[in-house]
Length: 409
Image 1 (tube, helix red, strand yellow):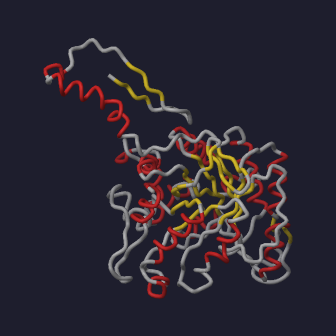
Image 2 (cartoon, helix red, strand yellow; image 1 turned 180 degrees about the horizontal axis):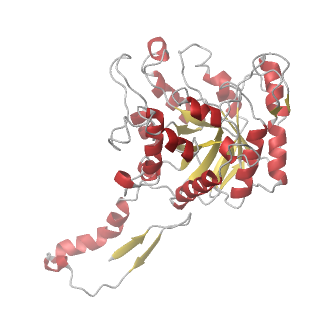
Image 3 (tube, helix red, strand yellow; image 1 turned 90 degrees about the vertical axis):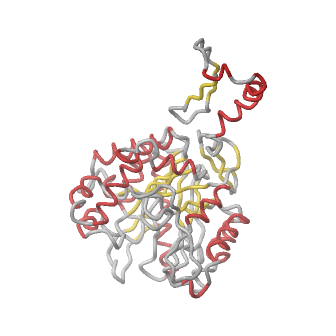
């Protein structure tokens, strides 16, 4: 018989023949059937794993393309929100707040614990043909010099990353401040809001670099969804070079430019990819001037449709043309039909978008496996009920089925 062993790390699957001497139950089956079974059994043995991509040992940038294991590859990724907050803060509010309850359950889903044993979040990502997972993470809990630093959180993140790597995924670790409108105030206070990379982002990124510098399948993404607190031209300067705005809500706040973060990560011998997101979901007005001696910067935006205004739907202007000459991928996208875009642009717009990024050869990471009514209707109730659109915008729907089909292609 054939025995298939699942690798415990990001290595190739091994198959070996075993010599079983016990009398097989199929011994009484007609010889013609046995001959047919013998011919087909190697293919049948692998059929259950046919969806699984080759385990990702390394990720690199060559020119403006991403390579997995030395081969040009399109990222097909899913997000897990489970680790966006320090666990102790979630446990403190899980009996009071629906957000905290779901977030606590999302951890069990990710680690395949309790009711999810045998088929957790990463198993489902594998079934969807994903090759990458993006973990949304708490930057304040990673800042060794900050008041919210948590060694327990660092350990949990190591476990989460190791599990994804052992299952063959590339891993993006994306730094977040607390902006989720559904989260309670206690969580907002534990990870203060910032529109641009700040000293906390820098120190958290350095912590990640020191922890994962020996794993070429781990990618660091700087602050999620940065936006300019001043005019856009000045905002790009603050984004790239850092500085202190003189006006506005964040007057006097000190921001750290991406060039300084890149420089310090490289000084710490971090050899991996660093993802930088554009301002407000766009690279319009991008001044250039990003400096990386290793040339391993990848750019990203999150092109959510919002209310469907032309600016939001200007894919060429916001990122498409930019992606022709820069390494680029979309690190978060989903499109619930209860937003304004649906009435303005029509239910066909999400499919049009997915066709657009496919034509452009742009990788996509979808939001999210463990948030209700996003990729799944509710992961706590069913792991097979992907979201889909109804016949009208008034019917609650989302792009789960479309994304699953996109990844299968």
